[in-house]
Length: 115
Length: 115
Image (tube, rainbow over all chains, first blue to last red; front, side):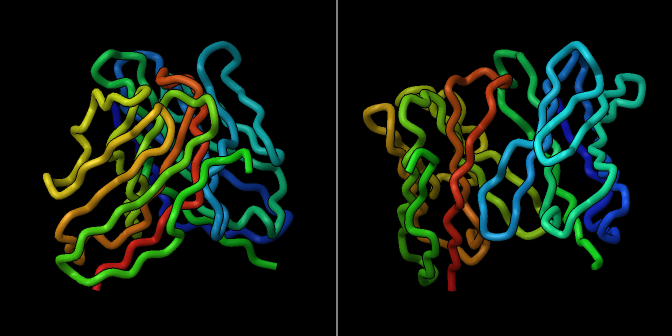
């Protein structure tokens, strides 16, 4: 069965510093991979998604993620974080199978930004 | 508005009471999803609808939980005889289709507190 692991529950970085949020997935075939962000008091918003092709995916708000099949990872990165990036980030995997055609979310990583 | 809406935004109830949570998806979206978000647990899939039918009810935690969707639009999640462990944020999402490649658009959620 497919699964998603986000090893870090909390991450704290200084404003202006670079960011990498880790995501590992388990699935036998090529997965559909997503990153969503949940800002305080708001619903989840899609940052980016990977289906196929170029393994480096660009998203909104200056985020990018890289699919590495050999490591079963889809880590989210940003070169320089802003205070407004403080939020909870969810990695998700979806599979194109009749019985498992739903998206499974990780438990999330809460990002804290130091001024 | 054009987004997914949920009502009420907050619900406080007493143990043993029934509650109904409502979701209005984006117009034209055929797929609708319910998730439960508990502290530190990420998003737990509950049920999805394609049109008015719910092919996968496997995520519902118990038979106290039920959901329906009428007219291919509004959905109601009902929890009977609420328990304290039902306290969580219940999120609804909709998408243009059921395939996992579609982005899910999330509502702001209903925060349920069972006293």
